[in-house]
Each structure stands twice: as C-alpha cells, then as structure tokens.
Length: 375
Image (tube, rainbow, N blue to C red; front, side, top):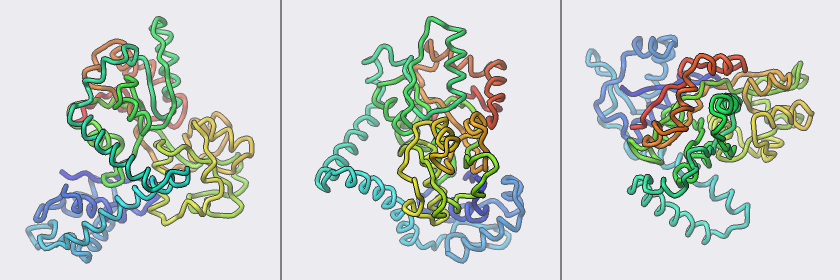
C-alpha cells in the first residue's frame, strides 16, 4: 500500500495531492492502480473525508487519477506522462541548482563543478555496486566513532554509556545528518545520526538510506521522535507565530548548517510556502547545534531559530511547533550485533534511558530502540 505522511503546518489536502502526484511521477503508483476509498484513507490519516475528497478532485482535474464508479478511484491510464516527468525533473533541477549556486559562491568554476559532479557520481555508483562493506575493516576503532546531527537525547545516551561501560569511549562529531551518512558510507565511523525528510514520500530517513546504501546493508535504530519548532524569546516580543513571519524586516533568523536535518526540514517547508531564502534576514547565520540556536535567541543575537523544544526549554524560550520528526541512528547491519554497538542498542531500549529522554521535554519514546533493516 502506498503510504502518505502528513505533517503539521501545511494544508492536509495539498500534502495528499503532492505525495500522490510524486508517487505517480516516479512510478511508485502505476496506471490503473487503485487508490483507497475516500473514507478509508481519511480514517487512516485521521482527517475529515472532505479533505481527501478535495485532494482527489484536484488530482482528477489534473488528469492524474480517474474515478470509475463502483470500480473505485485509480491512477489514470491516460495520464499526462510528459507533464509528470517535467514535474519530477523540475524538482531535481531545484536540488542541483542549490548545490551549484553554493559551489559558485565559494569560488569554484563551472568546469570544476562539472568535473567534480561526474567524479562523485561515478564513485557513488562504484561504492553502491560493491556494497561499501569491503571498506569497514580499514579503521578498527570506527565502531566507537559517531558522526551526524546533534541531539540532546544523544548526549544522554553517551552519558549513560559512560556509566554502564566506562571502558568504552564514544567519540561524537556533530556535522549534520547528510555528512554523518557520508562518513558512514566511507567507512570513517561506525554510527551515524540522521533526521532527513524525504520530500516525495514524507518519510524520515529510510528513503535516503535505501538510495545511498541499497537494500539490506544498514539498520536504522530509532533514538526518539522529537518536536521541532520556532524558538523565540520569552513572551514572544515580536509576535512570531509561523514561518511566514521570517520574511518580516524586523525579524532576524539564525539557521543550521547545510546538510543538517533541521536545515533540510526548513528548506522543504519554505519551498511549499513559496518563501525565498533571500527574503529572510540572517538566513546565512549558522549555529552548529540546537543548543547554539537557542543560545543565539536567548542572548538577543537572533529573534528566532528553528530547533528542538528541549533546547528552547533549557534557555527559557517559547516554542511554536512546526513538525514531529523521527531521529534514527544508522549502522551497517553486520555491526548491529557487535559490541559496543550492541550494548548501545540494548541501552536505548531500557526503561531507564527512555525515562531520561522523556524528561528532556518534547521527546516521544514509543519507538525508541526499534531496529529496522533498510530493505
């Protein structure tokens, strides 16, 4: 069954329209394939049936789906394949354009960018074909090395690991979700941490893990689900209530680094709302962790930042919720049963660890410690 994921802050019918349209564009939904009835889908998503009906009407008017009476709603057999392909290509161009503009801004020439892109694509194909596992024996201490996105629950995990296994010292590097996964792909670390939203499916982490590593190579272990939102000063003196307020000339924003899951979430939401990064004062001001974002707001260096509820709570800030996301730890499947990673996974599933995480605020631990083999 095709899965739809809804996130707060964006009209639900638009999310349904976009995710079905993208699924058809990439071939996840085939011509003639039946969609769920309106009431059934509405019940599964927890929305009003009129919301699903509105989404289906828009998709039918666009020629993406068709209603066949008692035979139900299906993907159109005569869908405009070229229009859907253009839609998908447009998404790809926007992704590549951002990378090209960033490289040009750093002084690289178009020729250097073209050569580097071709080389990296070829290297990625080679690593994927080889499964990347042949690289794992190169750094014997890699199982104690972590790279990825910063998280306060991670700090609690390292602290508990030091208490239970003082002979083991985990070495974290907070470099953002994407750089953490690349470090794992290169065999530099044994554990990565990510919370990357896949725009096409609305799902966290698993789609990009399939694309980077292939099926059956890595496991994703859920650390926690957590609340992300706008962090503002106590009393919210500038009355900042939504992402649209970031465009106001009297509001200064503090951002996370490119490649971080929080930055990816922000860019995803801004694109959906039609907000250009250039319209946001402070968009290029970077803070390396959630606590650094909260500190910038608390100290008055910024009026608002996107970060964790727990980070804002630590600095006495107010919180405007934007999304609930899943943070996963990622390791190679062959390492899951190897100490010290096996010990770490067992620790995550303990009542003691879950209690500590829940006390941070803004965390949900129902899935903490769940291990998923990425297929």
